[in-house]
Length: 169
Image (cartoon, rainbow, N blue to C red; front, top):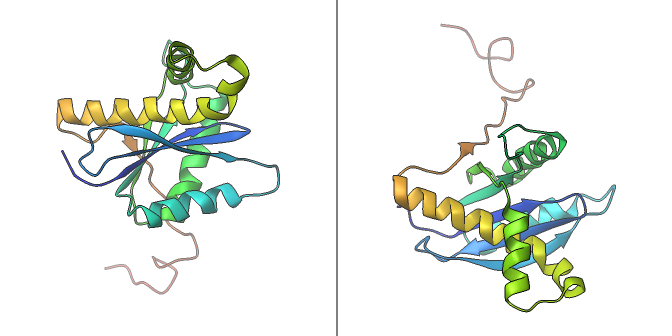
């Protein structure tokens, strides 16, 4: 098990829930909820700021899938979001992990903790991020392998490479 703080991300269209792990990677805890506003991408900047402030070693983004494992529109949005996060926090690695039922689990846990419906809304995204991150931490501890799949940034088409100043050998 690698050591270092991990950041968990639950991507929503209105809010992004964030969680963090302890340095040993044993326990995920809620961190904050970041609002998303159309035309304003400051939520990405806040994530990058947290990665720097906490010296995060890895970002874990939840990938919503249906119970059958199929990916729908929400999964596409999470994939696109993870790529932009990866671009902004590079070279810190970003991984996508299956988050089936994380929000349902978060609602159940908050209900069991006595948090009433209306008060649940501002924190459910953080709670879902905790479920996502804790699941990834537990998976890594059990298997000895990093969870999910890495987000790979495509090479810059205007950057170095054949046809851009770098010769083929």
